[in-house]
Image (cartoon, rainbow, N blue to C red; front, side, top):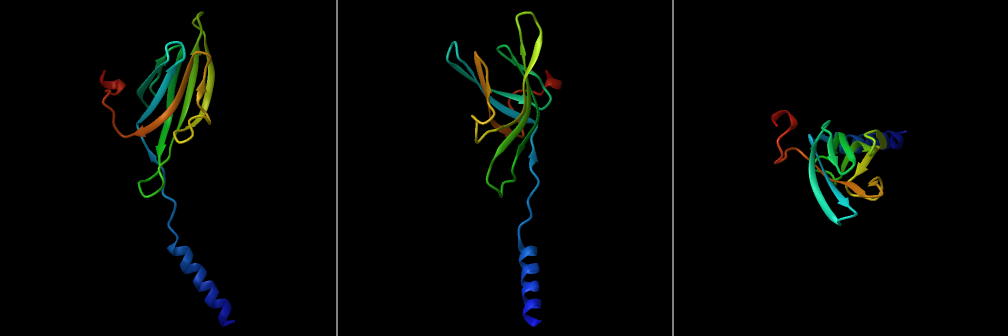
Length: 133
């Protein structure tokens, strides 16, 4: 019986010493790269959460952008929605989901003319927020 008690105490002690999973850090700015396949030009641009920006015929709206706390391995993830504007001025949702900066090919926007992928999530930008423009 003493052996079982010692094992239980060791397990509880180990669980208490186990580091708790930290909550992800919410960021107000998502950083994207966009490739125009016609010109071959790559553009890096900052977008505030819930702001919609136009990249070619695509309209991107990030809804969340998270990083892991500094004590964990870094990984940036963002939930974004992308609509494509046609020549007839109609919009079609072409993507709604999570993007991962460390795996850009996993959920990148792959359009006939444009590619867009998440690069980073950050706390501040040189671009003023929409409310200050």
